[in-house]
Length: 276
Image 1 (tube, rainbow, N blue to C red):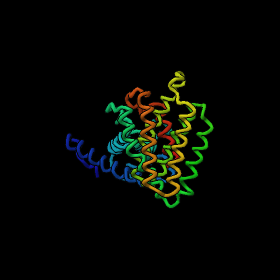
Image 2 (spheres, rainbow, N blue to C red; image 1 turned 30 degrees about the vertical axis):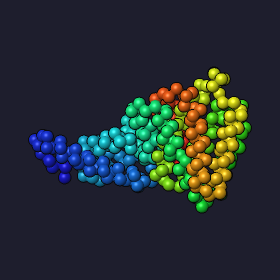
Image 3 (cartoon, one colour; image 1 turned 90 degrees about the vertical axis):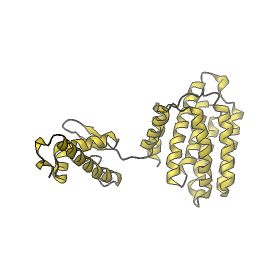
Image 4 (cartoon, one colour; image 1 turned 180 degrees about the vertical axis):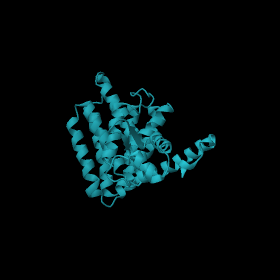
C-alpha cells in the first residue's frame, strides 16, 4: 500500500505519490469516457476513492487535479462540494480548436478557406445517405422556407442562412468529419453573425433583397442535388455557393483574428452539444 512508504523517502516518495495519482486519474478518466458513472454528474467522494484505490488523500487530490487540468471535472468546494464531471463532447472539442486558432492569430479568411474546402464534402455525404428523404431534405427545406421570411431583415436572414450551412455539416454521416467540420462551421457562423449585427448600422454594407434571393436559389440547388442523391453535383453546388458568398463577405469582415470566446461563439458550441 502507498501508506507504507517511509516518510524519509523524500523525493522518491513524492515520485511514487505522483505515479499513484496518475494511475488513479487514468482509471477515473476511462470511467468518465465510457460513461460508467451513468446519470451521475459527480465523481465519488474522496473518502470513497481513498478506500477503493487504497491510496492516500494527497494522491487522490493530485489525481483530481490532473483530471481538472484536462477539463474533465470541476472541483467544487464547501459542504456540497465534490468533483463535477464534464464528459468531452462536440462543444468542448470545438471550443478547444477555436481557442487554438485564436491563440495562433488565425484570421477569418483562413477559416473561410478551410470551410470552403471541407463543407462541400458534407453536402456530398448528405447526398449519399439512404435516409436523406426523411432525415436531411425536410430539415434543409424548412430552413430555406424560414429564410424566405427574412428577405428584409439582414440579421435574421444571416442567422437562418448560417443554420442551413450548419445543418448540412451536422447531417454528415461520418462522425469524425462531422465533429471537425462542425467546429469550423460554428466558428465561422459566429464571425458572420457578428458582422451582420455590426453591418446593420451601415445599410450600404447589407445585401439587397435580390442578393438574398440569390442565396435562397443557391440553397435550393444544393438541396435539389442532395435529394437526387447526386454527391458530385451536391459538392459542386455547395462549393460554388460558398466561394461566391465568401467573395462577398470577406472584404466586408475586415479579416480580423478569429474570436472563439465571444458570446455568439459560445452559443454555437452549446448548440453543437444539444444537436449531436
